[in-house]
Structure formats: C-alpha cells, structure tokens
Amino acid sequence: MNELSFPWENRPEQCSEPMWRYSANPIIGRYHIPCANSIFNSAVVPFNGGYAGVFRCDNRSVQMNIFAGFSKDGINWDIAHEPIKFKCGNTDFIHSDYKYDPRVTWIEDRYWITWCNGYNGPTIGIGYTFDFKDFFQCENAFLPFNRNGVLFPQKINGMYAMLSRPSDNGHTPFGDIYISYSPDMIFWGKHRVVMKPTPFEQSAWQCLKIGAGAVPMLTDDGWLLFYHGVIHTCNGYRYSLGTAILDKDDPSKVLYRSSPYLLAPAEMYEMTGDVPNVVFPCATLRDGNRVTLYYGAADTTVCIACGYIDEIIEWTKNNSL
Ligand code: BMA
Image (cartoon, rainbow, N blue to C red; front, side):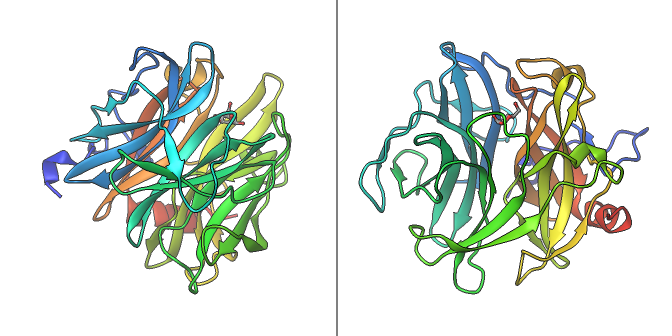
C-alpha cells in the first residue's frame, strides 16, 4: 500500500495516551449525502489500492440502512446516495425492516458484511460482495434478538467464527459477548460466552453491557479486539471503548481485558449529537504497526483515532482486569 494513502496522524506532542483522535474529526459529517440525517457506526476495508466501506446512514425519516462507499485515502469518502440492494446469496430473499451498524471483513475470497438486521426485531444479517457493487444476502445468523455480530477474518479450527451480543427488542439494559461457529455461513452453533460486563466497583464504564466492535486483528499475542462498554448514568447510557486480547485458537478465552477505557466520549462531537456520549468502534485499518480505528460519534458522525499496535497491546496487558 502506498505509504501516503494510509489514514494517519502522528501522536500529538502533549499526548501520552495509547490512542489519539484525528485532529480533523469528524471525517464524515451527518449531511455527507443528500438523504442523510446522520452517518455513523460504519466499517471500512482496504480495497483495490484504496478503501471501500459500508456505511450506516439514517435518512430523514430516520430509517436505518447501509450504503457502499469508496475512498482513495480513507478520509475523504464517496458514499452512494442509495442504500445497498441485496441479491439472493445462500438462501431465499430475506426481508429486512432495517439495517444498521455494519462490519466488513475479507475471508478467503470475498468481503463478508454483517449488520444488525430487522427481522421481527434486531438480529444479525450476513451478506457478501466481491466488488462493493453487487451484494448478496445470506441467512440471518441468529434468532432475534441480537446485535453487534462481528466475524473473525479467518476460519478458526476450520469454521467461520462470529462474536455477537444477544439482546432484547429495545435499548437493551444487559449484554454479554458470545462466540458462535459455522461450517457454511448458514448454520451457527457451539455458542460460548466470551466476556460479560464488569462489576461496577471494578470498571464502571463497562458495567452495564458490552459488545464487539471492530473485526478482531490477529497479533503475536492473540486476537486484539476493540469493543464497546456501556454504563447507565443519571443522564442515560454512555458508550466508551476498550480492548481485549483473545486466545488465537480458542477466542472464547480472554487473555487480557482493559480495566480503563481506551477512548470515552470527551470531544464535543462525541458528547453532543442525536445520542449524546457515544463512541462506537466498528472497524480498523492496519499498516504494519499502525492502526487507525473507525468509530461512530454520538450516533451522528464518523471519526477516527490512531495508535501503534504494540503499544496498545502493552497497555492492555499492563491495565488488564
Ligand atoms: C445501540 C445501537 C447503536 C448505537 C447505540 C447508542 O443500541 O443502536 O447503533 O450507537 O445504541 O445509541
């Protein structure tokens, strides 16, 4: 990849944190395409010498849907003005009442997309594309209600693997991260608990519910996972993000998990918006030791933050629960 095209900013001089925000955040504003009320919680991948992404845009009827986009530099995005129209993938056509919070990952020969799919309530929708032009929808992974379905970027012990967060039909006041396996992207099973919220006294930012964020990244120490954690404050839910390192061969084993948050709502664009006080990680790009994290801010815009993978891993180990 061309060095110049990686979306990145060096650590600011005064900063000693393991991750720092891009100075020109948000990189995608709420009105970036004509129909949009808000664009946030979106996923990007390297594609064709640049980048492609699947973006959550809520329109001005506040209908939630997902849209394809392309970028040369990961910062300036050209997002389609119409939502993705899926063709049949590995099953009959599945109706969606809505689609939101997409994640994207390359596995073997294609880009797989997961999202929260409205099918008699929220559950996990799955689709794939080869080119971000034609998209194919597959079986839903789980029964409703479920959110935050995040695929691993490679099979584990011969099976596709996915993290998810069983939930309810509303603004779920609970939530654990599970892992499930599939031989064929149709049938999912072998469900195991990975992580639960923490006791309030121990790490309060993640004491109500947690959910997988970006596609896990394989490192020498295991799978590095950026996830979100929620606390219920007197003003409502507050979404922050932290890191965990999962065992390479059995990711239901949590090796380390950050007690402090890595990033919490602190900038104006994270503290104000349609849903105040939300940072919601959905994707990373990696260039050697550099990682750029894409996150939704206040359910309104898309932002990025940068860091060095080895430092984030050390920080996670040194600040583990
Ligand atoms: C969750 C989802 C996310 C959103 C979050 C905070 O239930 O709707 O898309 O970012 O709430 O509002």
